[in-house]
Image (cartoon, rainbow, N blue to C red; front, top):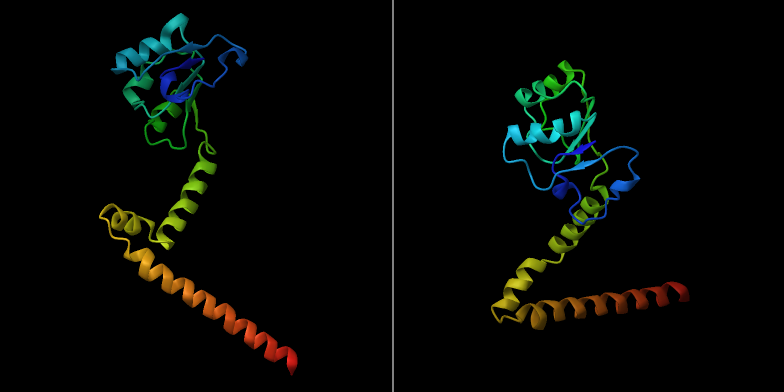
Length: 163
């Protein structure tokens, strides 16, 4: 198995390569050229599995892969960097990691929704400029309005119960 750019895949150093039941070649950094990429794939007589992340894998490069390569893994969610037709023509299976960042993306969406609904960005700009009017005017008005609404709701509820 060849991790063609292990540094990008194992960015936090938590992959336990010893758990793989095969010889693992870990190449640090992105390959500088297709020739360097090919050297990594061919090291040790050629590997069966090539794992890469966000590195272009062109048809010309795939055509030069050794016959030992059977699986090409993109360590992310997309395939846009891999020539799928060339891999298919060589009988190389291509797969990705579809759940690679699902939780992180969901968290980011919720963060953005909260940010935009609270106008956090504009409030931060106002604070940086020394403008605290958002807190002294707008938020105080919102608090007063909310208290008024709660007070009215309580009055209506009391009236409803008395009927």
